[in-house]
Length: 603
Image (cartoon, rainbow, N blue to C red; front, side):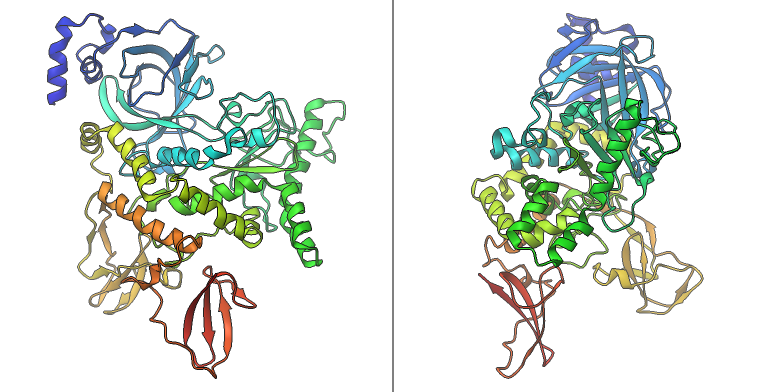
């Protein structure tokens, strides 16, 4: 490769020579092409560097990257920041993630050691304004053409909350005074070109983990609770195995065993046969358990209060005692703009600092901008997910998020307008964040990435069996049966395959519709997606009601025909499909007795 040959020629005159193990490798050439090493920090136990535009990472001493979460591979890591700063450290490496483990290019977790791969002595490393850490994640973003849209979205979320100043983060709003001032309560990332034994392996995002220090929490404080996983237990479907209690530490289970976050089970309560009231860890476990159970009862309690005839103001006070409204408003608007479709079930983080009031923060934003976890295609801006009807307003349908829409609609509209008017949430600002990441990775490394990972769906065309054609829509997806190899399909019949709808072009049997998954992504697609998304958001948040997304070609609503004066209203729905007792502020779908449907926008 051209850049390697040029850089290799520079080795003869290099002022600082690289370690012998890296000589004549692609990693060496990449470093020398960028000026070489001028500051070797390998002997430093505390390292502080500015956030790199693009880092260069070489992992050596292992034959392949870790493939399983249980892997604990002993390896070496070399880090070069592109500005002359370099260090080499021992690491313990494993694979990281859940659904991402199904992809050939895995996420990597690294623990940095100052001892012989024991992990008791570690290196303190700080990048830019991040909290100090001794372990990081290398995120593969295999289903994302840009190899980092999740990291981009963390930057956009930072933009959204920035105007809240010293109340921007949960620990600040909770009044925690001893938290690390750098605690973001969500990850951050920067691009990294990763090499294996000196040979290019892939483009990654070097990221902060969900560490308690970044959450502003104390591992020994039983009121500082952090929940991670499937937090969807607001409707009598509580299961301790669905989520992990990441903080505090040293907890015990109901059966008396130590709590293991990798294999979570019910926490110890005071009713456990093994409970010892003189054991502080047992007492803490029971305290944490009660706080989590109280969270699981919130929906029932709030619904009961609302049904009791409580005034709206009193109800809001009860809600705000349990949940952080400022944070929920920002999280909801941010999620709607970027289409954080996976952020209301298992990829939102719940944290509390007093065991009563809960704060929600984003995590794992890889399904933003139309990306899908399985990676077969990207969704148009009009859809939330493949099984959600198009042109539906983004409403997080779980627990506290539902109350934000039903009881804080005016605040949501005002906050969206504030962010739009301030230039924070605009098509131009969001595109700039995407473009910054794209340029930091650089075309050279995108070319290397896709030469190394040609099986990526996002750089190839989908090939469909000639007995089928893609329906071109996801509407009515939930009502269409999955493909059945034993069934005979006649022309015009439909099935679901690969999370898409296909229509038979002729009679066929045992012919799967998709031969090869694939689609073509790039900067033009995502720019167009952002423009279209903001047209919808402006309409949904009542920011610019002159923008009617349904009036454009492809809209789902029919042309409006004024209802006859003697036709009566039989139903009123909002944009989410929820039936209303009367037309309300904003968008209404009105069905008349003569069968006609009218769209009405009320100021």
